[in-house]
Image (cartoon, rainbow, N blue to C red):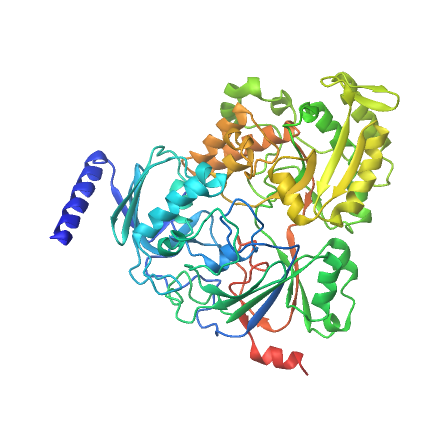
Length: 609
């Protein structure tokens, strides 16, 4: 009788939904792609960049710099271990890394939705289980969604803002209703839900940073946790998905051992001494000078330079706009003119970097030249909230000859400040809005940027700006940054080849006043908000590129941050005891989280002799 009731309810809901979308065909698929068609067919066996017969076994030893006090990545407070999301938690869908904007069935083996995108139904794989053997059900998915919306990071409320209702149909079926069908990325964002075990988290506080070993949905569990020092992950031998297309040939190591070091120099020396296997923290100076050692010359350590086709994201000195002193874009622009990138690149970085003239560097998403007609169609209605130069000038960063003499740019900076009403009194630059001397404290968690920042500080003092560098411990840094208690800091955003809902978290007004959001600068601009929605609602790739370029122009010309640099080459060193096949084009993590690698007994034997 109960089974019959469920069937009736399911038929009723399906009938109601189809009636609502009777003019919109229902799509049944193993994959979701934002634009175009998926690369892999329904019956595909594995991703091309994963070796289906990769042997299981061995240990991968990796390392981090800093500390951690939690293995719960969902708590707002605390500093979680950096590998927990990748290794412990599985999602409804799995992203493909050799195509743009496509995801394939994982915990949810298939999806269905109308072409109108008013709802999406995920059909869970009945074989899916948690690490303790409990089946993964639609009720777990609903619990995860509702709990993260209520208790998780603010980014979830921004990502999933367009979900109007969640409905558990049966144990393997769940439907999400979309209040904004033009949000073409929402279904993929929902596909990334990291499924939590309801029977475990109902008894534990998701908001609390914790070192307890949780019940998980990913390929690994924890076997050892030493707060701030070491975490050991153990592969789940009977992992339900190890032979599914989205996991075949992946996560091959029996053990992943993570050690934390307090200092970058100690980290580097530990790697060269063989204390861990993979070094992804290679500064230009170290890459040029630190590897003149026998292990590299003999081939025991491999120095790999891999072309990176990914959008590079954005790294720069981000200003805290909530501080009234930095509300004037003229001041922020002048500070950029005091930064001598060419000298820095030549003397500190061995000319290995390219200056970023975009928030989406190294991609077709970057704004170049003047706005196109299609960009103007988006920008003109927002003109009152946009710097005039968006329409008249292509953005370029100030340049020098690299000699270290930045006199000409400092002259330009002074003119910019004078036009904005700033003046010098007793050698101090006076802010006209506050009538106080301009001070700038650059907050960092590491002295790694000290060589870059100190010459910049000297140039800023020539403008009358009292600038200082403040280096604090990583835990204190996170607390100060997330509570917006800083003037400026060098911060990076994650790269993406297909921008979407995450842009609300980076630059949107809703995120500006939320602690722990990624809108560290506190941007609150209706034009930026509107352009983000154009990105999210883009009906095809061409429209997405157009809207992203338009947003790029507004962010750049508003001088919210001083753009830094990027490298289209990934520099990674590793001990030569692993194998992998060709890295996927769009996976920037391939050498940073090597879940497609496998341990080679023969190579390791050669290392020992």
